[in-house]
Amino acid sequence: METSRVLVYRNELLPRSETFILSQANALRRFQPVFGGLKRVSDGLDLGRHLVLTLSESESWIEKALQRIFLRTGCTRRLTRTIAAQSPRIIHAHFAIDASAVLPIAKRLQVPLIVTLHGYDVSRNEEALNRWPTTRAYLRRKEELREYATTFICVSEHVRRRALSLGFPERKVWVHRIGVEPCEGQEEQLIRDEKTVLFVGRLVEKKGCIYLIRAMPRVLQAIPEARLVIAGDGPLRKTLESEAALHCRDVIFLGYQPQAAVRKWMRRARVLAAPSVQAGDGDSEGLPTVLCEAQAERLPVIAFATEGVTEALPVERRKVLPKAGDVAALAEEIICLMKDDRAWQQASAAGRDYIQSYFDLRMQTKLLEDKYEEVIAGAHG
Image 1 (tube, rainbow, N blue to C red):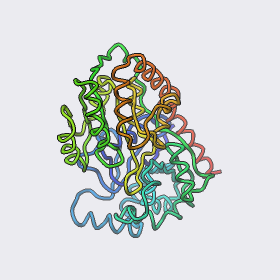
Image 2 (cartoon, rainbow, N blue to C red):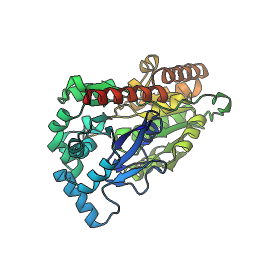
Image 3 (cartoon, helix red, strand yellow):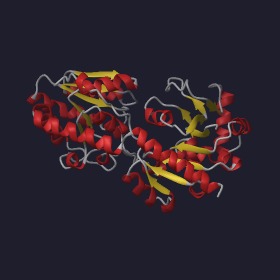
């Protein structure tokens, strides 16, 4: 029996920070993923093992014009025919913005559409969403999208609440976490650097790296040998490097790191600090996958107590999280887990158990495939 195909849609295939989308696709067993989008990202994730369908084959002005026309009108014979040839049983779009782009194709082919809401698509304000052709297309089609899509998958309860407040139909909203790969049998390989504080993420406002840099002088007063390692890149890198030069010594900017290298750092560091905040344009976290990956590696996480973020941590850890923007409290929690072995062991074990229970990638993907089959059966019922 031939495996049913699911079109995994993202306008840009696939930014390096979005390993969670690729991991979910790789974990599918009952469905064969085919990736579709407007274009490939030149320095994006390696999708070599998967079939990739795009509207544009280059960055020429003609191809860019085709993208603009498609986003404005929804018309593209080329991409529609290419997708139709693969006979997908369902289209799964990541982010509401991307779903609005593929919506006309889904309707034309009469294929059910599922949308994962990750966070920024329900948190950014309308002024921010009006800046780009892709987001303007979403604003034009958002009511049509809410009517046609069968399911809106929310990665956290926080995203669900935001979606409902914006008018997404409650009967179509489903909370489902993507999950992460379990790290079984890694305990014997752990050689911790007791003085390393790790940050992993894009260097953008909502990730809050600047608060961590400002907390490090307090950490260094208590632990002079401490160092901060920042794995990630983004538009704020130069600003953060300048801030680090002013406030503290021994900050290492690694730049972008592939997932395997990030996992090695997670097995090496003492704590992961992820002080996410709400950005000025409203952008906020849905549920940061990096927190789950760290805890799967038994690495305790320190974060600000912001919605979405707290759902990635066990209940007992949520109680000690500092309030958003509280640099002094952030430093104190880092110092506690750096110096107190008993507290570290408790946080490590609680985090690992929580991820194994609620974020196992294989189990979460099985539930997703159950939803695919339910939607397909409903479409033909």
